[in-house]
Amino acid sequence: MFDKIIAYSIQNKFVIGLLVIALIVWGIFSLRQLPIDAVPDITNNQVQVITISPTLATQEVEQFITTPIELSLQNIQQLVEIRSISRFGLSVVTVVFEEKMNVYLARQLVGEYLKEAESNIPDGLGVPEMAPISTGLGEIYQYVVRPEEGYEEKYSPTDLRTIQDWIVRRQLSGIEGVVEVNTMGGFLKQYEVAVNPNLLKSIGISITDVYDALQNSNENTGGAYIEKNPSTYYIRTNGVAKSLADLENIVVDVRNGRPILIKDVATVQFGKAPRYGALTRDGEEAVGGRVMMLKGANSAAVTDRVKERVVQIQKSLPEGVVIEPYLVRDKLVSTAIGTVKKNLLEGGLIVIFILVLMLGNWRAGLIVASVIPLSMLFAVSMMNVLGISANLMSLGAIDFGLIVDGAVIIVEAIVHRLQVGFAGHKLTKAQMDKEVQIASIKIMNASSFGMIIILMVYIPILALVGIEGKMFRYHGRDCHVGIGER
Image 1 (cartoon, rainbow, N blue to C red):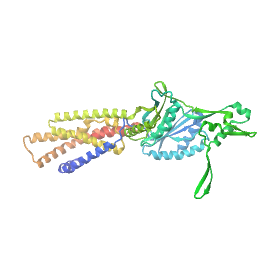
Image 2: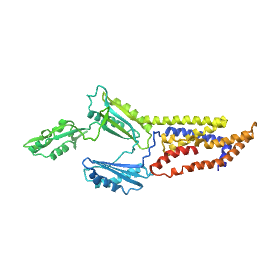
Image 3: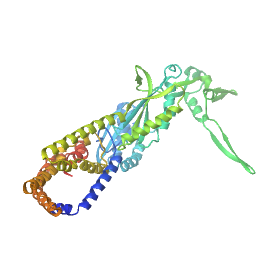
Image 4: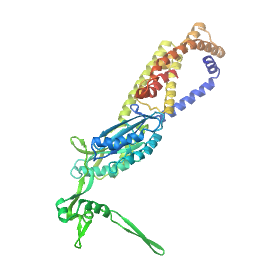
């Protein structure tokens, strides 16, 4: 087979030239489309189910929430394992699928089986929800929303939290490649009705009456319509509270013809939702956010989109408030890829210099050296087809010795045959083609065994399973051995 390939290549130089040009074009196109990241994401194929239940202790969370969810998900096909964590007020169930399972199909199946779990969870204890399609490496942009110098007294942590939730977060959502924007720090603004139990007891009103009054009186209702040609007038009442005063004037009950209002039995005020942590900056309370990237997305491209959107959001913020990023993925990516580029360039130049020096023929040295960029372009193209990102591991494992090994042997055999057998003679094109073909075929039979032996060394790596197997199969082999032998 090798003999026929060599003979065809020598006899059809124009066709081979076109194929090389096509490879270069394909490689450059793939290089522009290739996802770029700092490190490979080897997270297994999983779906997380999160349930929040602030009223339950750890044992109750396990009993009433985690166990029903696990039992309902047991019958999903192509399942690898189900593991769970139960904490105070929190249940996290992780469903791991086989790698061949499409993540969207997996989420659809989990969503269908969760319906059964919801029916087994007592009402009011929590609703299971699936986590976004992201991984531990999905945190690409973290920032704080802070007041500028001189505006610290104007904006409280509650005000900054409101700006983050209603201005920054809403505009960051919807960016291609962004699946979630999480808020950290500050206080979530709430409207609180602090009931005075002594007043309730003296009037004879229960706290349930207050709750029902708030619920029933804080809504809009619709009625019929009145036709007056050519117009139609719809009847509706606006009952949604828009201020603290509206809440204070809600009627709880009527006694002796006198309405009992909320303000008669309670204090209506602004409050803060309970929280279990805080975000600090330079030792002071801060408000920030975390942008989560879609699993498998191009982190460099998504980060650029987020940075562009942040510039636009900054223009819509109140005076004296700025967005200050403190963790941006592109810095890590640029540093890692910059290191790889530097090492590849220096290594390639050293290899080319040594080849030209040792072969004693600059044309032969350049021919061998051309294998390096062509192999890399082919490898990049296959990485793009297989969905492998360019990262520190996939590009940093390139071995130039393996890449040029076969080319060095063949070119050296050709140069040796021409210099020893035809020194001082000028060969015709037909004679040159014949001698090149003979030398290539003669050495290729021996060189092929060397390539096979090198490939066999990596067979144990291909036998690895789990996270280790995924790491080496999809990020090590394709760019270490693969480039060298292609």
